[in-house]
Length: 287
Image (cartoon, rainbow, N blue to C red; front, top):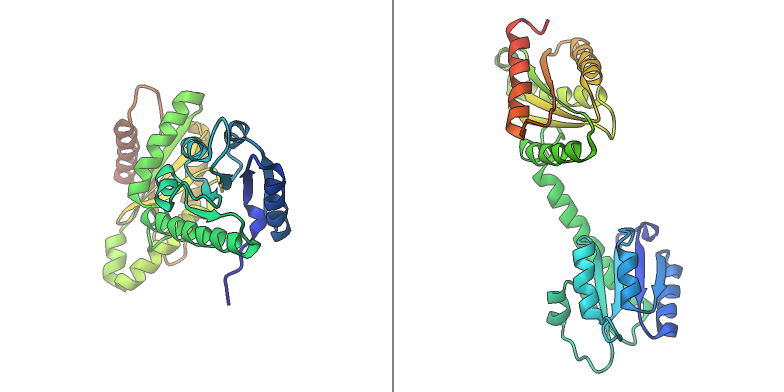
């Protein structure tokens, strides 16, 4: 049985200088459940694509002023993640490789049936899902489900750039589990892995959902990037994290250090400041 897709999440822009053909395609896709719009020329289509709402572009190749090949190239520059199907006529002046090199995912020849174009869209959706899953795996720690250290540095660099542009505060929390080696030695590595996973859940449940981002930095170390968070907010979240670990019955506690970003820092300075704060608190028993 084929996999079901929620087409209502897909916004499709159809571009064709043959108005009746374009409207027919729009109606076909709308009846399947897609959010479909139609535009009759490439220049207007390019302007619409700049809003970033479209997930699919279905464009005729042979059009006046701005042809489909050039539209595809520009669309990929404006919206790199958009999926594109090129539509060719009987003459087939363009090959599969022509449209793929321009940036399209696939092409279809006129006239086509609704099941043909649906099949091509489904294939693209499957490929997109697989690509997204692989991308997620590459930045996720498989034990805790948190993001990994690799993604931490990429995300930190992005957030520093954003903080500088928007003049918003940015803070960073580092956590290190207390006496985790002793816990591993006493209960075994399997129990230690279960405890690390539980610690990941404690962190997620005590930071701001969809605002802050948690990472397994390595071993028994964790990090949290707090956007639009000044020192006061960071102290409050640190206190929540402390309470969360203290209530972790039969588990381990954590030492917590933090730093707030200032413009003279680079990412290494920022990390070093938070790491030094953690070290100092660990030395004095997280007091």
